[in-house]
Image 1 (cartoon, rainbow over the protein chains, first blue to last red):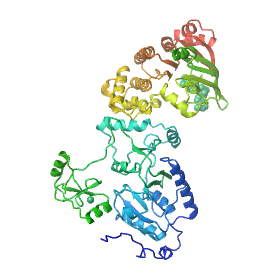
Image 2 (image 1 turned 90 degrees about the vertical axis):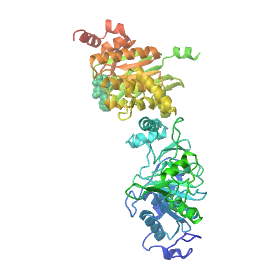
Image 3 (image 1 turned 90 degrees about the horizontal axis):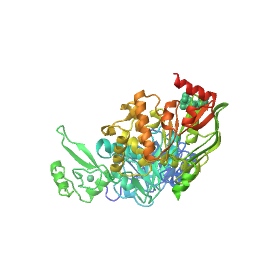
Length: 322
Length: 262
Ligand SMILES: Nc1ncnc2c1ncn2[C@@H]1O[C@H](COP(=O)(O)OP(=O)(O)OP(=O)(O)O)[C@@H](O)[C@H]1O
Ligand SMILES: [Mg+2]
Ligand SMILES: [Zn+2]
């Protein structure tokens, strides 16, 4: 793997003529300029009211709803020729969806793309926040299927808006109460609701709750786009984002019995991989860039390390596996 | 001093409330006052405007004209004109509403404990253990087996659902409770127990209450004063015993005689 840089452009060189890269017959970044201006205005409004969902005139994109059309419209409206785009799907840069969105923007906007989190200026994501800390001037764009955290209890849009406006959020805590009463703990593992800036309850899209703490006071701008539901919302840099919980049942992130089998990381979100019929499994980082970077630096995991041994690690309070 | 003051002004002052549904009259020019600790019964036949009036004075429906002054903990507010946040805050902290149909007043797919706990959590309680203890406590008060705390109301009998509604409303110690036919649709024996329970709670908690019913026996048991409605208007009002024992208006006389000779 290329250690120096993972930046790719269609022409193969970093600063080749943008025009020659862009597909003919399409507007820059696919959407027409008027639509992009409308979406930018929506984004500005969303940034001004952290966590508040702003409706927008969602356009058709050349892929079906549910494939990230909301995120793509935000990306299309913001992306400039100097931007460097990273797209992840469940943490991976190399899934079909991530690859095709990346290719889409490299063709329609002629931008450079990368798999490296720290090199990207724009990161469009489905279901994860990168492990690498995002910094000032980066923008992360979440693809959101269901933007409304109150929808489960109240199907009427008008009533939901009223609940947000009056900050009537008791029902969200009822949901947590029900979880604890039934399961002995808060069972929600994805799309775990948060309170933004002490004001609006927001659905963070189906990221694992593991990623929730990363949203808190993140230096990067966070934008959320729901294409089918026609909503955009935002968390401006350094904004407080608090996961809902009870004093006696505080918010906790998930833990794993093993470290990453590839890079030995004990602090990243791990995917479980079943190895055979006998149920042997190992855990690897869901963030492929993070994992590769560690392996490149010389970190190693231990694939043979059985779950048993790692459990001992936890019991002694040590989470060292490598 | 506060206590003294609050006993010298009515808790609720209803001033010439009218509600028109297009050209049809819901209720017309209703005036009354409700004093702290008082239970007011609103009686009348079906369609006489009882529910309309109750909805107007409890902040759930906008009247066509008139005003409702509520002397709450945060001072006197006009329930028809105050900003919505202020009104809704008063409604969820100091007031309660028990609906005729439990479906309107309960979350049918949330456990009994969650139903009781909702107002506590809406008002800022962020401690599961405390919510749970309060819920158990209130289940006991309304005579629902504590074993049922994690069951959902669809598995409850009609009487239990009404008692759960009452618990859900009273858990935050409201000062004022509105009830719309809380006992209709229940068996006579279940009705009697619910009324006993209500009577006990009203005294114990020093509740003020406006209760709509078409059952004069219910008002005899619970209400200090009565308003008799017909065709949207209040045709007679006064102390319960006076109205029932010596009705002045022909319509009230008819109502009273109809329960004496069923
Ligand atoms: N939403 C509405 N639209 C139009 N007319 C209505 C509406 N609600 C009530 N009304 C009318 O207003 C009048 C008073 O109705 P209301 O429901 O207040 O009576 P009620 O005394 O509560 O009757 P009941 O004992 O049957 O519950 C009736 O003539 C009724 O038809
Ligand atoms: Mg009615
Ligand atoms: Zn790894």
